[in-house]
Image 1 (tube, rainbow, N blue to C red):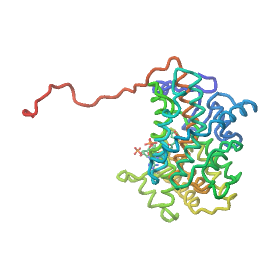
Image 2: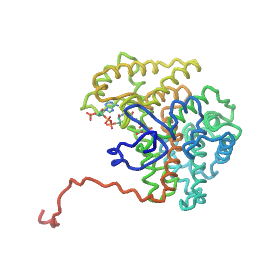
Image 3: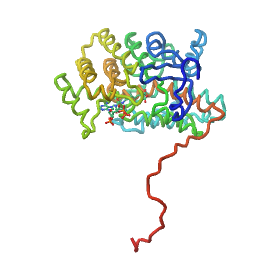
Image 4: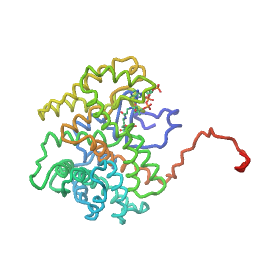
Length: 392
Ligand code: SDX
């Protein structure tokens, strides 16, 4: 019982862990980071400030924030040999495949921050992961285009630095549009952490064995890639583009309701939310704001709005309590910023690295922490004696 709310005893008995970082009430559509509502953080905070909050538990003073941002900024470069490692991939590799590989290899480049028994090394590894993820994500994008890697520029904010590494080319400087920087930063905030989702649980389980943090985050990236999880933002925009015009919505709604059809409405439904995902509410409004400010008229947004209304008024979706989730509108904004759909889950991983690192630190610093060992319900054969092949 933490005063503000008490755990449902039934729920506690099935909880995989206890955490102080993020609270979700799926029935009410509530999402709090260290007690602060996600819509307030998205509208009033910054991704670096939310990162500090998730890691440390309290909002920083200005000097604490400045010190944190300076430390992160000074870790944004990657080992020069990493660019050689990058060049081993095919140019047409999916950026998430590259991200999985490169982040998993970081422990081969940063041996001095892999000892999880050393608190100092845990801090250095945490900062390195948060600081270098934008650089690696931008490198994955540049590599897929056949363009040269762009080094970080330390006089830019975390998010502006990422956008410049992604979109600038030697032939012409890229001045990040403040509208785009703000939209990107808001998207990062909305994807930063989300309690014990599949990828965060993967990071915790990997970390419980004592694996180094780079390997644990790589495991989280691999899990996030699935279309049922972080891969849904790429799948949702592809679906909206495939639907094309609102007159084709009924066909897709019918498919989504057909038990014999594996098709699911991407960006809809959630393991926990049985009400609106509060992040989807913020993104729905941001989609209109950003496209208006950028002067972009994307018919996909109209299709998304129409699809949302049809689904929300459909008895099947009402009965199953299916609402738009964080992935339903994010792709419309990311596309307006200039990203291809193949980069959408990379951006999700970039932002979620902050949550994964915060959750990993909470797990690894718990003295009572033991190795994770989920049990099973065995439904296989009872014990029987071996039969030689000539008697089978
Ligand atoms: C994320 O866990 C997290 O916190 C994840 C995340 C995070 O920030 O980390 O929030 C990010 O992963 C969001 C979810 C992104 N995925 C998608 O948008 C993919 C489409 N959604 C579905 O695949 C589905 O909704 C899941 C995977 C998200 C949840 O699936 P569940 O656990 O089966 O959902 P449920 O138990 O609420 O389903 C109830 C019923 C089921 O049918 P019945 O078994 O009762 O017959 O609704 C059906 C489901 O089959 N259903 C859908 C549906 N989602 C659920 N039917 C059609 N379209 C859908 N999108």
